[in-house]
Image 1 (cartoon, rainbow, N blue to C red):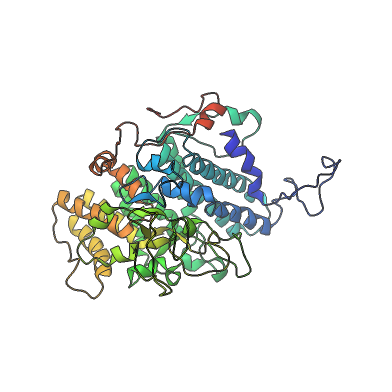
Image 2: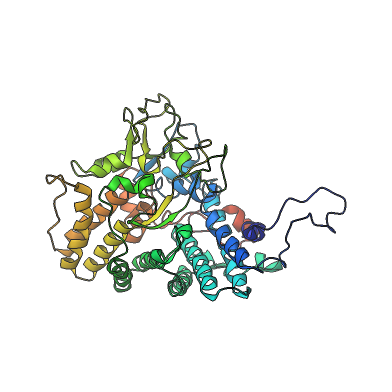
Length: 495
């Protein structure tokens, strides 16, 4: 844990520059370099420290191969993709043969604890700055939301966690132990509630701040926490607050959500902002590798070809559902911008690609990815609200929410995706579960849904994966973390 957390805590400040290899480098600092003591003095530095937390979500650890391996590829939505001999250890997650040394598990653990480290530094020090109180509280609220989001992902992946909410000192790095997941839930809830109290809605931000975390984003994450805890009543409250705010709506065309036209649009509640700068030839500071690792591999050469939509996912759509076409790129298909046709790559078996991660031509190379990473959409909230209401015995209130999503998907075609009319709780539950899958496919939600529904085992076994109950519901704690703490950070059962 110390190796993950300590090494990157100071990077959160964005204040350390490369030192000269001069003899007296311990006594002199290069011109322009700030020390820790000199930072956190101005409003601009408070903003920089907060931006440093956001920046983590564009790193390879958090949004590239490790992330898709530990979300879509774990689920029945996707297979590894690419060629058989490319990143073969990712197949161990696809096939549930991974162990605690798997190189795609450690990065998500490390990446999110780095994010938490940066958030902790900012949360501790921004309140000490003499600055506008409203801005100060908002920045802290943004950081608390990001800390909560990282813990929310980690607790679903690993179960009990080391809980760090301050900057650790000295031997504290070695003294950490895992806390029960209920303790982590409490911390997430506290952070999100405190953030909700101070964050503005999206129309409360200046144009230059578009994409920053809003009150509704924090409420949406809190609703997801309550759904995980099966606290249907509180989940319903958070979802309905967002719905009744009138600040969000479904885009007329489902596919627009994943194109540039839909970024930060009416349906967007929380997305990670990215940009490919026109003068940038390699990966720029605002870009991400998310698009690259899932891009078409071959002709056209758009990326690495990982995260292949599975046969099971393709077959799960109702006849004529336009969402399948908006989710999957097939061989022979013309790309969304009409630029070219996808040619067969003989080195890839049953090739398909995640269309939701596709981006048009952009400056720089593939790793200069400009596509915003969608974290929370309004349709997700509508379906969570429908699910919560159904579990509370309010099926008649759940139906209109479910049918809003289906109506948008069918568009003007009255022959597909008819409204759901059943009110039996058990039968409606199945309809909602199915709708969540096809609406949110390849958006990294499916694995977490299966876990909270208690259906990971039966679903994985149904598609032929050797899932072991009591083991594979969580990932192994990276072995390096167990070793560095002398076993104080213990391993999950079965690994």
